Image (cartoon, rainbow, N blue to C red; front, side, top):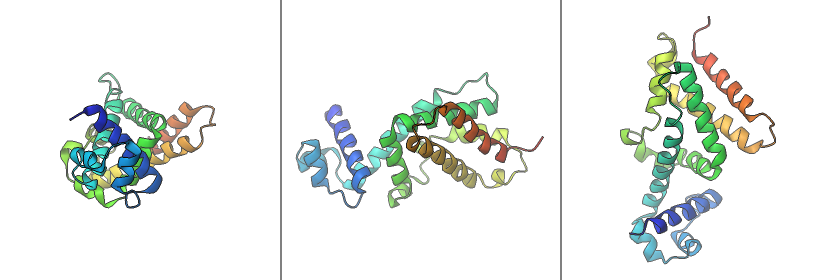
Length: 190
C-alpha cells in the first residue's frame, strides 16, 4: 500500500475527528475530504475504530521521538524530567492538532484498547526517571498509576494553556515554572 496515501488519510481523518468528534464523523466524510473512495479508505483501515486507533499510535510514536531526544545521561533526574517536560510541551505547541486528538482520544472508549499495552507505554522512561527522583515514602510510589495521571493532567494543562495563550512573551519561563509547580509537589521538602 502507498504510505503517502495512508498518512494523508490519517491526517485528514484526524482533522475531521478534531472538528466533529468520533461519532459525528462518518467514513464517507473522511473519504470525500481525502479525495478517495470509501472502498480505498477501508482497504487501508478495515474499520473506523482501526482508523481512530491508528491515528493514536502514529501520534504516540511521533511524540515519543521528541521527548526521548531530550534525555541526557549526564543530567540529574530533575534536569532530565525538566527536559522531557519541556519537550512534550513544545511538541504540543508545535503540533496542536495532534495534541487535541490525544486529549480527545484519552477520554474516549477507544483508549481502553491500549490500557495494558506495554508497547505503547511511551512514557515509561519518564515514569522510571521520576520514580527514582521522588521520596520513597511518597503516596505516588505506592500508587504509580495515580502519579502518571497527575503528571499527565499537569502536562496537558500547561500545554493547553500555552496553546491558548500564544501572546505569552516568555513561554520558556512559564514552562519552567509549571514544571517547578509539579516538581515541588512531588519531592520532599529540604
